[in-house]
Image (tube, rainbow, N blue to C red):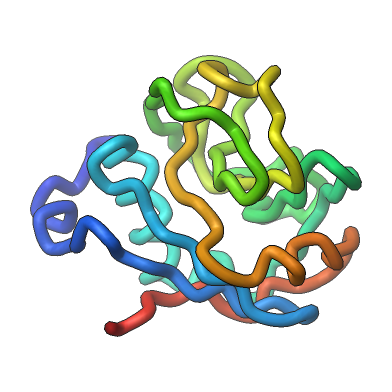
Length: 154
C-alpha cells in the first residue's frame, strides 16, 4: 500500500485527531515525520470515516485498548497492508500504535497503551500519542464504540 506523499505534505507537524468514543473524547497528536506511512494510512481511514461506528474489540487493563477491526473480533482488516515503521520512541502511557501480525502487516487496527509497555518497543509502530483524554482511555471496555475520528482544526 503506497504512502500518499501528496497528502503527507499537507499535514502539519502537530496535526491532531479527535476520537469521539461512547465514554468521551480522546485527542491524539500524529507523528507525521517519525511514522509517515502509518500516520497517512490513519488519516486516509479517518477521511473515509472507516473508524466511525467501530468498536473497541480488545481492552486489556494496564495494557491496551484496541480498535479498527472491520469484523469486530480482532481478526479483520482490509485487503492491504502497510510497512512497519520502527523507531527509537518508547511505549509510554498514551502511546498510539499499529496492531500487527508481524513485520509489515499493519493495516486498520490500532491501539492506545494504558501504561509503559517496553516489550512493544521496536516491535510495533508508534504513530501518535494521546494529548488529552487519557482518563477516557482508562475507562474503555470491550464493546465501547468509536463514534467518530476526525481532524482537529486549530
